[in-house]
Image 1 (cartoon, rainbow over the protein chains, first blue to last red):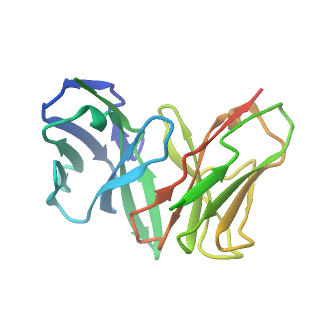
Image 2: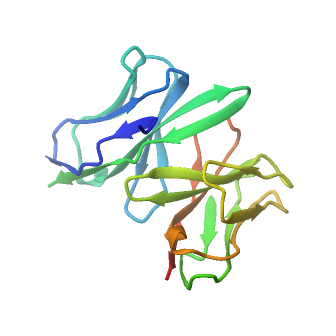
Length: 113
Length: 113
């Protein structure tokens, strides 16, 4: 079992819809959670970074972490064609001062005009 | 505003050949990483460096070597390429291990025949 799991998609939604992207993790030692966006043939770029359970909002994007159920979500409001990309979730744990970042395989999102 | 630059962007090798991927960053970051990205697998850490002259093994180090002779450069070498090393390789850098923000290059696509 992978430590961080994502549905690979693709997830196809019409422009303007609310998008929900999800991730689950198996290890309760994970403390930090990130969402990266990766456009086709480009490197990933950080979108959201959260530490605790709860919501964090940045413009049209909201990251939600539920540590009790080990569930991470990214919501995109008023989705745009430019949001079409692969979204990677990542979780980080600290063990003996060693920071280890574990990545999900990514969910491909397609926003149809 | 280069950020992280990888060369070459594409390469085709025959089994048994050797090559070096070069990564250069202009953000004065201490930490640099080499990842490989394969379909359905997510990003997997090959090797990383916490400063000039240091290197450490990641999750999948076998078949690869690295060197960090200068702070801004991180080289990834394949001594004897195998078809299993066909992948997209990403270099990244960060200001610290605790930072969830990695800055990625655009990737190097390697095919081993």
